[in-house]
Structure formats: C-alpha cells, structure tokens
Image 1: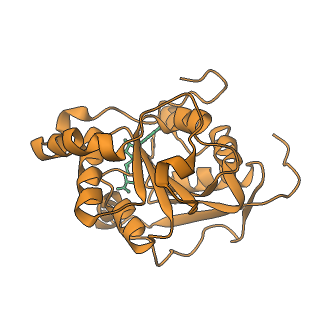
Image 2: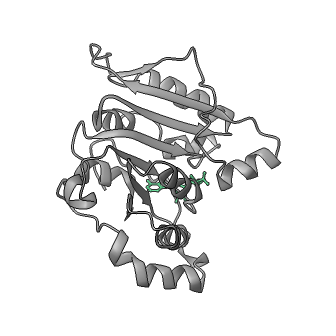
Length: 231
Ligand SMILES: C[S@@+](CC[C@H](N)C(=O)[O-])C[C@H]1O[C@@H](n2cnc3c(N)ncnc32)[C@H](O)[C@@H]1O
C-alpha cells in the first residue's frame, strides 16, 4: 500500500463466503475477463480492442448494477474494481451469461489500481455505489471518498468526466459532499445533492438501505479545467 497519504483500509476481506458456483465461475472465467494487478498503466485499447470511453466502478459488490449498466451501454467500457471474491465470481458469471464484451474486472484494492494502472485524464467516469460507510467516528479514516484519494480519482478523469457516488449513510454523504467540493478540478452542478439518475439500477446494498427506511443521496461532480482549489 502507498505511503503518500493514500493508505486507506476501506474494506474488510470477506472471502469466506464464496459459494462453489462463484468459485467455479472465478476459476473458469477469471483468466478471460480479469486484468491482473500491475505496476504499469493500462492501455485501454489493448484491453477492450476499441477506443470507447471507460468508466471505473469501485466496489461493485455482487456486480448486478455493473452488468445492467454495461448491458444497456454497449458503446461504453467498464472496469470494475473489487476485493470481494464472491462478487467477482458472480459478475464473471453475468459477463459470460449476458455476453458482455465491455466489462473487465480488477481484483485488487482500488487505491493502488488508480495510482498505478489508470492513466491520468483517461476515464469518462467513476462510479462508487454504496461505499462502506464506516459510521463510527474512529473509523472515518477508512472512508474511501475523502482527500487525497478524491484528488487522485479526479486526476484520472478526462475533462467533462464525472464522479458519481450514491449512499444511504447521511453522515457519509455530507462528509463526501464536503470532500468532493474541496477536491481539485471538480465542480458540483447541483446545489448539494443530485437527483437520482434514471439509468442507475437499484443495488443490493441500496435495497437493504431502503428496507431500513434510509434516504438515498446522490453526489454527481464533473471534472473541470477551473483553477486549482487550495489543498
Ligand atoms: C457496501 S458494499 C457495496 C457494494 C455495491 N456497490 C452495492 O451497492 O451493492 C462496498 C463494496 O466496496 C468494496 N470495497 C471497499 N473498499 C474497496 C477498495 N479499496 N477497493 C476495491 N473494493 C473496495 C467492498 O469489498 C464492498 O464489496
């Protein structure tokens, strides 16, 4: 892990819960659709065999939203980054089953993936749906959507690209709103929170939040060429 202020332990490893079917999918399809972690920047053309715009999704969980969005937008490419083997197995199965040519997976911590593998200014979008909320104050340092990570993420977006985060944790949403507002070269076109995007499917964690009666909040920030904000 990096030592430049980007060391975030934003997840707990949950590999114990992999079903036999998920492991089978991982064994059979991992080589076809997973990109191994590497210290070198990816060449998206080599990965997808086209120049279509690329979205990264951080923490796709079971990947149902990833697969649906990718199926609905075949003219766009998607890289899902996740550390949860069960979810990776599940999404691999979806990719194969739906014949999705525009999805690849990196099984690794998203922070070094962004640092090492994603070229600057290369992404059309970053999706972060229901990131682990880390509600206790002593755990806030484990939240992913905070600086300097958001500066790193913004640096990987092309001009006009966007970061789209959704959460049902009110405190995290307010925290992320403040962090993204202070992030270099990002612009919020909404006064605070955005309206729900009609193309985003409901995710597994969203269903849980809705069942608890939580409100869903959406943050949608664009990359701009405006002068840098002070750190
Ligand atoms: C609360 S779940 C949400 C999953 C999914 N987006 C959804 O809405 O159903 C958060 C996911 O983010 C993943 N995650 C957290 N930190 C990560 C990191 N640094 N790199 C990759 N995945 C991460 C976790 O493994 C977990 O599956």
